[in-house]
Image (cartoon, rainbow, N blue to C red; front, side, top):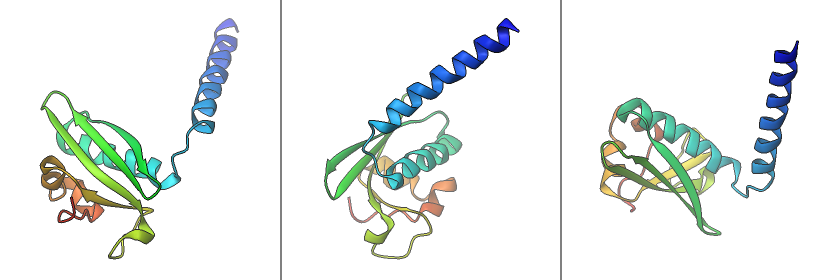
Length: 120
């Protein structure tokens, strides 16, 4: 019984921390979606990748994903899908900024994200 109570308290604490992080987070849904999807796809192709996003200005966000073991950093500009110059099947549109991002755009699951490799 004590284990159940302890696990319940732990679950409440974790939920509270996640709720505070979410409430204080000004990332639009499409940024969160891009971070999760790109991180998952890059991890599938390269192994463990960590992604973070940052707001550059009101019109642009950037997503940086790093694979420390391989020394690779994948940098993308992220926009809502309505800003894409062509139709995309998700809430976000990506432009590859650096060479690692451009190379990844043609590999594995990443090719399904329709990444613009001619912009960055």
